Image 1 (tube, rainbow, N blue to C red):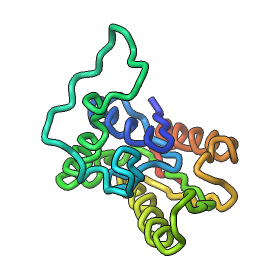
Image 2: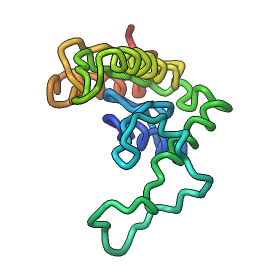
Image 3: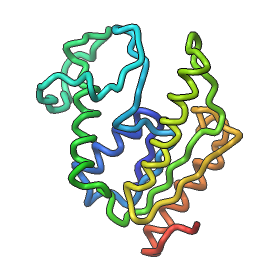
Image 4: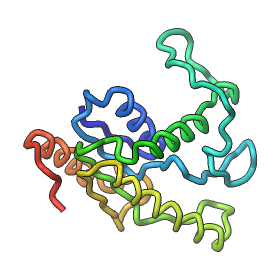
Length: 181
């Protein structure tokens, strides 16, 4: 499988790859979230490093049957715990993808969210840019691409870039080759 994950989906791809690594040919991360990301918490009304909000509890197995949730239930929100798990896992295994091909696409257009001061956004953006670049270190066979013409929704702003990245990862896997710089 070539896994593609956008934003928080980048974390889901990484969870899947950790669990089923032998099934993974390569990965494309599209302006992905980082396990150490600072995000705005609506319930808390402030910016927080989500992994620091984790309560000490186990993430349950995925429920494959039953009725889907129709509203937000904080007792069923394990996102902070999952961020922390990825953070801790990466401390012991900084390149969990080994040599599998990985392309990380980053958005170049990153306006401040509504209500965020310019000074705070300058700090948060710098950290975010460094974190997205850091994700290219998940594999020894990786390439980082900054798309200056795209916003967070790269798949909508520049679909050919995403499609080419998927094809390049698949080609590198098939040939057993390194990604072109």
